[in-house]
Image (cartoon, rainbow, N blue to C red; front, side, top):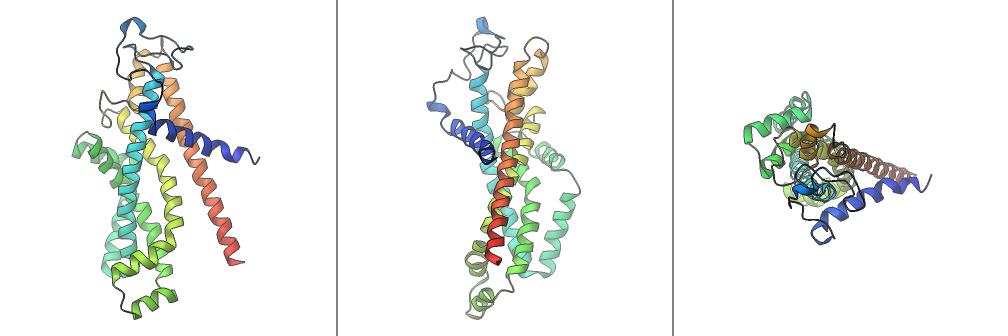
Length: 270
């Protein structure tokens, strides 16, 4: 049972490793076309087979993980940063600003994130930068609501009141006193959001609104493989399996982190 706790984090670490070091791994050229080798099934030479242009599918899956990792880091950083900033200000300042931010968050919560990301992508256009912006706009409310709740709790603590009495500015109170005391919560929330961001990126890419050719993406690979399901099942099944396994690994790892945080809090209050 103890070993099982490390399966998901180990798999996730392996995905991150191959994504970061893909250019230095002994892989095929991701864009090299070899029509003579088109639609070859998985083998010792091509672990995930080849696509309709003879490109190595495993290589493109690895570079697809690199694309997803870049989008995850940018989108979670942007969406989480925006949500944390608005949540801190809403919880600390209160009043009309708090009401506006929370009503905006409630409005976005009324629609699924994928619909919001889809609408934003259609409005902004395709491209990596617009994809990150669209996903960030769909994911900030959860950060804002949870950080606001933490700020409401912490702003009445003695160390915050003493900082205010000492003449500390709002920025100093937020960044030096409130934010450091909720970093564990923010980190767990960011880990939880990774699975959502990966799903949104794959969904938008599958619909043709995300990553554009020739850059590989798990979503585009699954979409491109639909035309060959009867003769080349691996083009859709294997990238799809990696996508599902990665999302499960992320969610399991975030659950383990949340459990560890809860255990620490229980010990702190004993």
